[in-house]
Length: 156
Image (cartoon, rainbow, N blue to C red; front, side):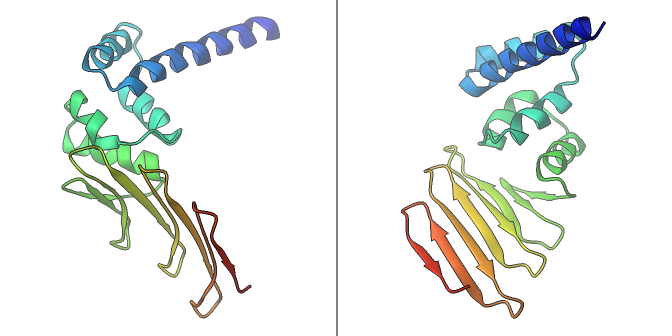
């Protein structure tokens, strides 16, 4: 019985990965194929998209425009991706504190930010592969900085 369950789970995982591979291409025909397969296999496309994007596959808006999602569905997808209630304005996503956590241009350039409980930026990443990590002391002073160029400033 355990072997059968493992086999089924493995097949489901592999099947989902094949759908993810089609989504990653960004090709309109492949996206249409994902939509048709999802309907035929009774796969919840919204949950599939959340899972796909949680693996770190921006740009989000560029791909989501192919799915004609309602405003409520978009809110649900982005809340699922970021793990909190979000506000969508144009091609930007804001957290509950009004801070921009994601922005995307019409060309597909994107950038993501993460904040600590004191609203300090602790992580930044963009589609060019640039990133920054920051840490702060209890008074909000920056004590650590590191970026994708290898620069580190450590005052901990």
